[in-house]
Length: 288
Image (cartoon, rainbow, N blue to C red; front, side, top):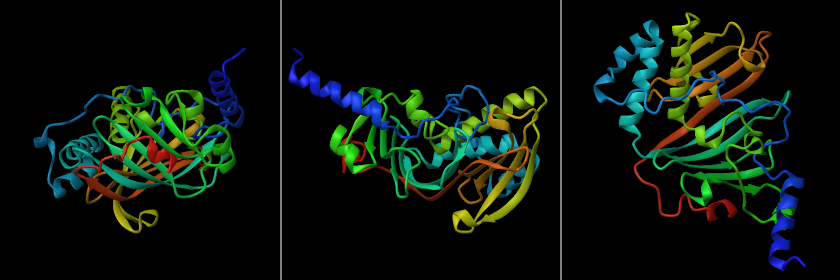
């Protein structure tokens, strides 16, 4: 006879699998990198020296003449200006499994070292969780999820742990939580663009500084990369934007050869944190 405690745990696991209490819906295609910049390893640190940071005027000139150097400067400035972490609001709109979901607004709290990511949906999630937490070295390195449905929480509990690199965990987005973050996004761009340049396939056009309505009119340096041959899911155009004031990567828009949207990501209301209050990344915050 199975002990009561074991039986209860088995029931929870079964219900977890049945109800798909994960951060995203089922999908038939493999998960992709969030910004689909290519299958290129992300360097541990692309640029860290402070003397690599140009003036604002020089940065604008680099944007016009040397996109790779421009993004390297953005990485260097991140290391200088955001040594601890930040909070932000992400607006994402993604095609998943061939279906374009409704735009989602997510509050993000991000710590650099050790990496910690807390995401709280303030709109209806495309997936089945409305809060997720990943803390490097904690919770068995699992992703802590809160089911968005009150019924699901009553059945399986207010916290469910899952593999952050598993197919299910990646099903609701284009990146694993462990590879998320403003810095890693820029490093991904640098890595992919650097490889494309080595292969003589880098085609990037500087579009200038524009006010982006999705960011409440903030000025952004915009770059457009044309991908040929197309990347996964038929991505042929990637528009990337660096905030003109902070140089943070705040815009990513992916489209296919017909101009149809594949995904878009905007980051606004970014606040640099010098420290986080005690308990910010405790798993109990997910259940609240």
